[in-house]
Image (cartoon, rainbow, N blue to C red; front, side, top):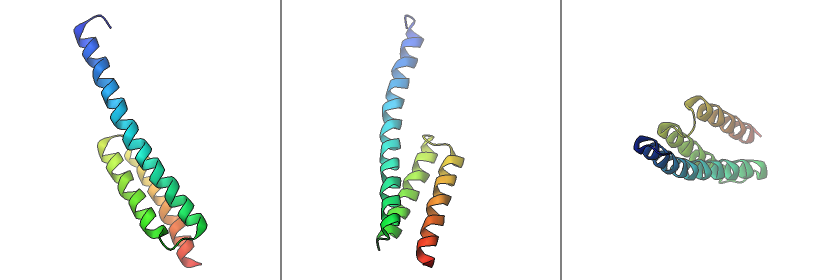
Length: 87
């Protein structure tokens, strides 16, 4: 990028990418932990699912995930939690 506006855009996109990557990793880690807790049938799976849902809401609010993607993932986690609680 040779023009100043192009350099600024590149710089901003790199910063945004790093910030989004951090949020995305944190959220995905929480989702994986919730799924593992649900698969194991842990007593603390409820807390893990709620933490993952909260992080999904935050990521959607920040624009890291699309709101429908966050809603779909939350719905699937909630359905898995309900199946576990019915057993």
